[in-house]
Amino acid sequence: MSDRLPGFSTLAVHAGAQPDPTTGARATPIYQTTSFVFNDADHAASLFGLQAFGNIYTRIGNPTNAVLEERVAALEGGTAALAVASGHAAQVVILQQLLQPGDEFIAARKLYGGSINQFTHAFKSFGWNVVWADPDDISSFERAVTPRTKAIFIESIANPAGSITDIEAISTVARKAGVPLIVDNTLASPYLIRPIDHGADIVVHSLTKFLGGHGNSLGGIIVDAGTFDWSTGGKYPMLSEPRPEYHGIRLQETFGNFAFAIACRVLGLRDLGPALSPFNAFMILTGIETLPLRMQKHCDNAKAVAEFLAGHPAVASVSYAGLPSDKYNQLARKYAPKGAGAVFTFSLKGGYDAGVSLVSKLQLFSHLANVGDTRSLVIHPASTTHSQLDDAAKVKSGAGPDVVRLSVGIEDKEDLIADLEQALSA
Ligand SMILES: *Cc1c(COP(=O)(O)O)cnc(C)c1O
Image (cartoon, rainbow, N blue to C red; front, top):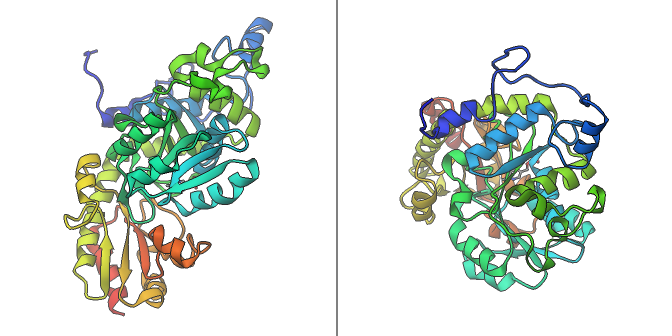
């Protein structure tokens, strides 16, 4: 073995995996079992007391899921990770470790529509209060900080318009406030942006999108950067105080720079229960092997499609950070030099009706509520994902009535452009 550190594409294929020790199977097996036999009573007791690592029950951990966790932690440059059933489940598990009822977290206003809903409505019933800030105005994050602020949440490449967030600037605000920065890296994937390199303390993904990549399996993952000190000021009792569930151990003291990932597993996943099926973990692992190839093709196609749309007479404007004229192009060059992602929006001169009509005429682009599939996808956010927002909030979050969102797939770009051409001229 050479002492070279493996590159990103090598990690995407190999990190966390080895030939199966009993059968020699080269692909990671699907350990489709609920539970695991203990060696003896002492072994069982030490697993339950967190004195030893090992498998107990698939709600807490599973060997197939463990390969996925190790692989994504390696790709993101974190210390450890925890896979769960969906991106939304990951968000609940993260915030449950950080917030007590009555606490606040600051979130960028430009987010996945489902996250806006989850933060506004579902989390309110837990007593977790979201305070919105504008990712284009860093000082709005500073102004939102109060003594009850426990975290800041942003997307690296933000929904729905594919705008690029200045992660380093917001991480400076988080440091000053003494709270962790959580970055939803779903639209970028670690191939385009590694938020930990720019100051993120926690990275979260919907594995359902580009990491799985084939539109066939839901999943979510939490990556611990190992950078945050949870012991200061008693602000994070789940991590710093003795845990009655585990004979009074303190997670930060016992697990150091991967204490957050452990808390998410043994306090969050164990008790809330959103476990990832090992079958889905297998599907997503298979997807990740080709992430670098797919992501580059997604980006190259998206740029070609954005250029075509920018020159079309029916199109009023295109928001794609990969275009030199775009207001986020500078940030794209800094944070995502390989490509500005494959999800972006454009607006039509014909407004709401033209948006609805375009979506119905496209043939190769599928009209559905997802992103990050091999297939090209289209949606009209104002009538679907963002329909619950009032008109002003729609415009503020980048989902005005005339806006259409694309997730550009890995087909031949000439075919995608021809489909848009026929639908726009029909
Ligand atoms: C889809 C998505 C989520 C939610 O993930 P699910 O796997 O659908 O629960 C969160 N954030 C972003 C950016 C997403 O695209």
